[in-house]
Image (cartoon, rainbow, N blue to C red; front, side, top):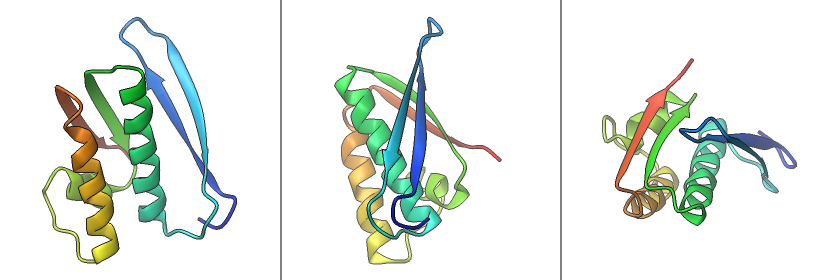
Length: 101
């Protein structure tokens, strides 16, 4: 993902309401870094909306596995992103990540 690239976040509430967000990255990032940036922004948005339970679907199996502690972070940068996700996770009663294809 290069400069000016982005990602989308869709929050779906139990009532069926949907909120769509676009995230623009202003720096060069690998796919996994872009996935972490998207996840972190998604968590921050959910926190602002006072969401207590969150089910996240992500298409990066590496990011999902690292956050769910099924694999370790090999680079310090990925570990820092993962730690930021852990800090934000504490704001929820329950959070579950699921890898989608």
